[in-house]
Image (tube, rainbow, N blue to C red; front, side, top):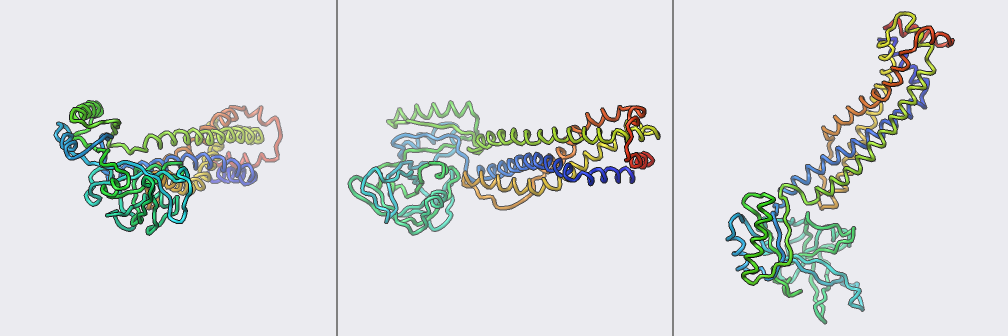
Length: 404
C-alpha cells in the first residue's frame, strides 16, 4: 500500500485549497456536535450533583399564615418526611447614594428569610462571602451582587410606608434556584424572619415539603390533601407546585436548547457532506484515465474504491485534529456559560469521553458515506472507456496499481 498512500497524499497535496476547504467543512460540523454533546454531558453532570446537594423539594405551597400549628399539620400527614418554612416576600429599595425623589423610581426586590441558615435541609443556599444575615442586616444573592455591583458593606435603603430603613449587606449568598437578574428577574436579598417581618410585615408564607418516597401521582394526591387539611384549620393556600426531586429545575430548558443546537450542528455537518460529494466527483472526473490504467493491469472494483476512500478517511482524520481540541474548549465554554445562568460554577476543564467518541465516529463515517456513492460510480467505469481519454498522469495510476 506504500505507493497507493503516496498517490493519495500526492492528490491531496496538489489540491491544497480544495483539501483545506473539505477538511474545514468537516471540522466545523464535528466541532459543533462535539461542543453540543460535550457541553450537554458536562451540564447534566453538574446539575445532577447540584440538585443532590441542594436538598431536593417534592412540593411547595404558598399561603398564610404558616405558623407552628400549620407546620405540625403538614408533618402529621402520612407520607410527609420533612417540612421547612420560608418567608417569601418583596420590598422597594435603592442603594444608598442613589436616592430617588419619586416612589416609582424605587426598585422592587424579592426577600427571602429562613428559620435557621445553619441548619437548612431543603432548597439550600450557600454562603459565598461574608456572614449570614442576623439582626437588622441583609445578605444579597450572588448573581444580583455581580449584576448590580453591590459588594459586602453596602447600605440598602428600603421603603417602609412613608419612612426609609437602612440595612447593611453583610454577606453574599448563592441560591441555585434564583432567576438570572441579567434577564430581567428582580434582585434577591435574604434576611432573618424577624427582619423580614420588620420590613414588610410578612411572616412564613411558603412551606417546602419532602415526601418519604416520591411518586408523581402520589405527590399530586398529597398536595391536594395538604391544601384541604390546612384550609380546614384556617390557613389560606393560594399556590402550590409539585416537582420531580430527581431532576434539576433547569434540566428541561437545557434539553430544549440542546435540541435546537443539535439541529444547527447537523445542518453544519450536512453542508460538509455536499462538499465531500462534489469534491469526490471532481476527483473521479479528473482521474478517469488513472482508473482505466488500474483496471487494465488487474485492479478490481474493490481496489479502486479502496484507493479513493482512503482520501475520505484522511479528510476526516485531519478534521478530527482540529475539531477535538476546539470542541473540548467549546463544550467547556458553553457549559460554563449556561451553568452560570443557574448559579453553578464550572470548576474543572476536561474532555468528555462520550463527546470524543461521537466526534471520532462522525469524522470517520460521514466522509466515507458521503464519498461512497461517487467512488462506486467511478469504479464501475470500464478500462476501455476510461483509457479512451489520454492523461499525462497515467504513470501515477500504474504505480498505484502495481502496489495493489
